[in-house]
Length: 165
Image (cartoon, rainbow, N blue to C red; front, side, top):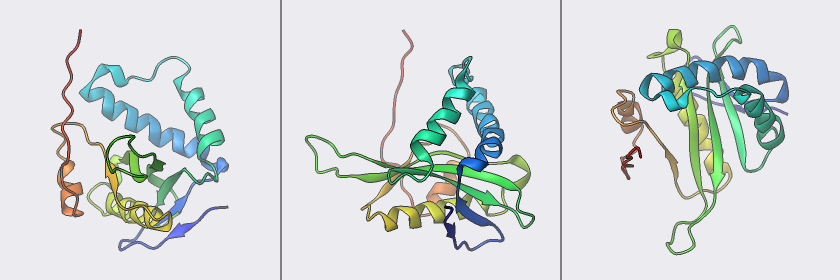
């Protein structure tokens, strides 16, 4: 069963169902290509699409720990998505369960139209429904879209440094 979320733009955001797998794969391919433009390691490995589909249908459809939220335009076409997930606490710090957004992606033709913001609004509501104290999203370093998250009231909290061996 799909849940719909109210948004402040002309887009409908709802939870995905198993029937949405093909449309999500179409968006996920675009997301993966965008990531791979930053780092080749994000190229989808052989069999990766099938693994993702299995993960989606077994771990995210009607799950209490995660959902894919889909944005549809006025014609009902899926134009954006993100994964909202409840993640665990920390064994030492006062860092309880919280929300985490993965794979926030809007098709290029629909960017700067508020679709990304509508997805974030829906994710925030999804986290509130699950009584999370806070939520996070990881953004690749140097990505211009990070301004979107700051305009949403989010603040940078951590930086991850990496060194290839």
